[in-house]
Length: 545
Ligand code: HEM
Image (cartoon, rainbow, N blue to C red; front, side, top):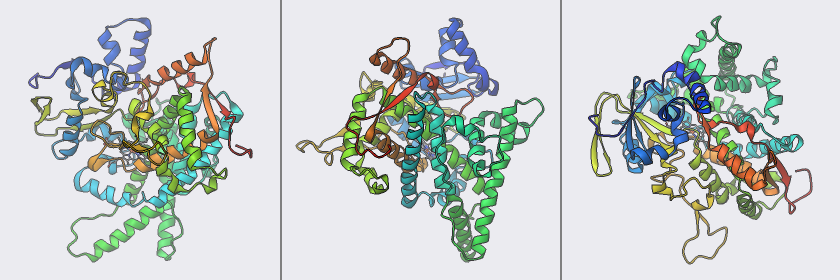
C-alpha cells in the first residue's frame, strides 16, 4: 500500500508448489462450469500474465503490485521502467529463488550473479562462435528437410508442437555434442524411450528432464524415486543420472585426448573442457590472478544442461507458433517465399551459404512478430534484494520495498497499444520492415528493425542478454527458408468451416497459453490445430522435396 500503486490480491501464492502442479486445471474447470469469481478465473491460473497480455495493464496501469502470501510482485508493462530496471544491475538482481529450478546439476550461468556469473558466462560464451552458427544453419536445413518429408507422408499433422521439440533437440545435439540424428516424428521418437539404444541417451534423457522440470524442482533428484511418485517422475530421476554419466563420459574422453596432445572433437563439451584447461594454465601462470575462471566437472555438466534447457524448448515453442501464424496468413507465406527465392535460387541446399542468413530479413521479421505476440518466457524477473529501490513510473517516483519481485512483462509490453497501435494483436511482420524514404523498392533496400528496442526485447538486453540469440535466429530462419521456398501450409478445416474460419480459429487458439507444470509458456491446445502442406504450383526444381 505504501507504494501507492494499484493492488491485485491473490490468496494463494503463484509459487505455491501444489498450485503450480494442479492450480490451472482447477481454475480451467471452474471456467468451464462458470463457477468462482471473475477475479479467481482470471488471475489464479498459472501463466495468467501471458494470457492477459496488455489487458490487465490497461485496467490497472503500467505498474501494479500483485500481493499474495508468497510475497509481493511488482508487475510492469512500461518500457522506460524496463530499461531502468535492466540497467540498474546491482539494485535489481536476478530472482534466484525462481531460477533455482534450473539447479538440477548445481549452479550455472543462469543461477549465479556477479563474479561467479562472469566466470560461467566467459567460459561458456567461447562456444557461441560464428563457426558454431554455421553448423546450426546447416543442421537446421538438414533437420527441416527431414521434418517436412515426415509431415508430407503423415498429413494432416496435429503433433507439430511435439515434432518441433524433436527438431530443436536434434539441432542442439549437433551443436553441443556433434551428434547428428535423422529427423523422426515425435510419435516414432518416443519408441526409443525405453530401449537401451545408447545413441539416443543424450537426447532422450534431456527430453525427459525438460518434460518433468517442475516435479524435479519440487522433489529433487532423489525424491523423484520415492515409492509414491508416478512412473514418469521415477524415469525423470533415472534420466538425470543418465545425462550426467553421458556428459561425464564425453568430458573424460576429451581430457584423455588433451593429455595425448590430440584435438579431435569440435563439439561444445570438448570446447568447454579445452577452454577450462587453458584457463587453468593461464591462472596458474598468473601470480596476481585472484579469481579462478575455470569450471569444475559438475559446473560443465550444469552449464550444458542449462544451455540445452534454455535453447531447446524456447526455440521449439517459437517454431510451433511461427508455423501456426504462417498457416493463418497465406499472404505472409507468399511474402517470405519471394525473398527466399530471390536470395536462394539454387535447388541444392548444400549451395545455401550461411552468409545468406542476414539477407533473409522478411524471415527474421516473421520470427520477431511471432515472438512479440507469443513469447516463450513471458517476462523477465528481477528482485529488489535487501534494500528498497525507487523507480519512476510516468511522472511519479515510486519506492519499492526490499524483497519485492519485479516482473517485467514482455507479454504486456510487446502487445500494449501504447507501443503497437490499437490493433496490437494483429499479426503483421511487415511492421518490422521499412524502405528508406526516396529509395526504390528492392529486397536489398529493405531494412529490418532492431531486435532490441526500448519496447521490444524478445532476447532481453544488457548484461544478461540471451547468449543463444543468434543461434536461435539462424535456426528459425533456416527452417523457414527450407520449408517456405517450395511449400505452403494451411489449416485443416473442422466441422464444415470455411478456410477463412479455420485460419481465424487456429490463430485464436494459438493465443491461449498454458503454463501449468511447465517453466515456459506453451500453446494450450496445439493438438487441435491440424496442418497440411502443399507444394507450390511454381515450385523450384522437381527432385524430391
Ligand atoms: C527463440 C528462442 C529464444 C528466446 C526467445 C530466448 C530468450 C531469452 C531471454 C529473454 C533471456 C533472458 C532471460 C532473463 O534474463 O530472465 C535468455 C537467456 C538465456 N538464453 Fe535464450 N532465448 C532463445 C534461445 C536460446 C538458445 C538457442 C540458447 C542456447 C543454445 C539460449 C541460451 C540462453 C541462456 C544460457 C540464457 C541465460 C543467460 C544468463 O543468465 O546469463 N537461448 N534467453
